[in-house]
Length: 304
Image (cartoon, rainbow, N blue to C red):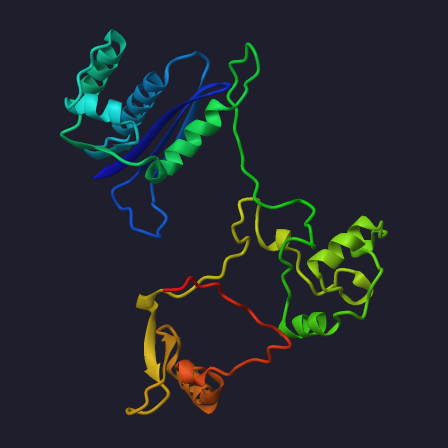
């Protein structure tokens, strides 16, 4: 069963539609292997209901090209969904013509369902349509345009955003230097008063000599413009690991080791882990309380 979300929007700069299609194998928190995310900017004016119908027809044509047979259709336009299902009458000639065009395409699919969902649930298609409707295109241009979304600054703002440390020693040095270095510039820039005021308000900790430490890794080297890790670590799947008890039968302490390890290497790992069982926290009672004068993180929890 293919799933498709559609939406149309009319904005101050015109009309746009958004379509999100994903293949039958779609599991929560998993990236589908076949996804179509489409958005179109119209070079003509139309009503919001016409934009919704245009989005529905465009998405059905894409599904047909994908050779989809069984489809589930989701949209936040109650009028369009219920007119197509026959629950609402299409009295206006334009709406009736659009409804008939949709029904003609739906006959090409052996099995389909139409569902009206809240706009919040249709947020992907809605965001695409809203973006396109507010996009101002060049006059008399037939060229295609691509829009790329950036999530990171080219020049990181070390006062507002996270800084990645390479190891625990650099974090310790950073924390211990609080209050020792004042009235110096960030990244070699001269302090102009406003920066000093902002630093004092935010209680930013100063690095020694107030220069980015050579061991610190800028975020832009770890993540691309889409905020995706440049060199992601490969984690073993559950099928590729096995549970090993380095405790006792009465007090088991389970760790996971790769099944691909040679027997000699596996035995060395077990001996090593067994020698340092007290290093790990096996339940909440093993957790050691840290020194709150060094670091403390408070999680706001609503009562009840």
